[in-house]
Length: 190
Length: 126
Image 1 (cartoon, rainbow over the protein chains, first blue to last red):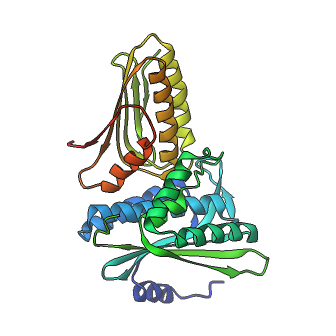
Image 2: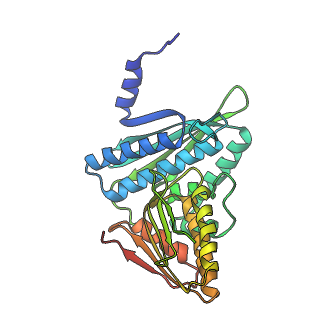
Image 3: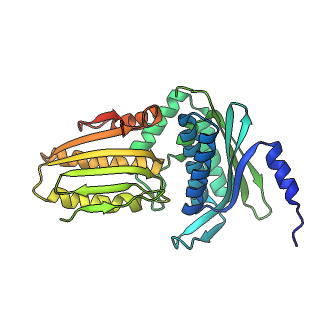
């Protein structure tokens, strides 16, 4: 039976200024609804259009990472394709900073790969990041599942760095990967 | 060849390739799970178009938002346009961004960075 109380979820979200959070299969419809909800909410809060676009973009790239790399997969009824399960959400980290957070289970090999890529990205200066993005854009092709290898670079480009991430060991050898990405309200001018 | 028109969804753009007017228009948002589902059918139609005895194609890209995998496929689109130009077709390419969307403006600059195709990056007025 259920052994949680809704009030605890309510408090957790309120105390951490989480505006919304979703856990489940990241399908196209879910993503489209979340996108609408966020855009509407941020516009209502009189957020700068540029910040709204950045938050939205980070959300999309994070969500796409989940449905491609999550080791929990379900068959989506809409597309008859496999879709990853994970958690994504948005909150206020400070008065002037949004946080886009995401989490999903990955294999330990996938975890090593993600860790390496994020450590590299976090070590780059803004200018190096721009160059690396361009190099990645120009090299290679899109993989069969639509991956372009650009998602994490894009997330980094549009946020305050470093990207905050960690892995938690799970019983079965898999890891829980979590990532927090911060977006400042005032214009960062790239 | 018939007009190729695909209606927009929340995650895929409106696409119109009109052999009559010689124009390709992309508008709306592009962030599908797999951007190849959007772009590959278009590439086939473009091949068909360039196989016709047409001298010119005007390309208008008025996307509000596109994700990284769509950006990668935009690059493949540009390669195809470049190839057409190299085969003596006239290609007019206009890439638009919304007023204030300097991120999108930079995306277009990076996209065209090493291309020899003529293009314009324009602020949208619609």
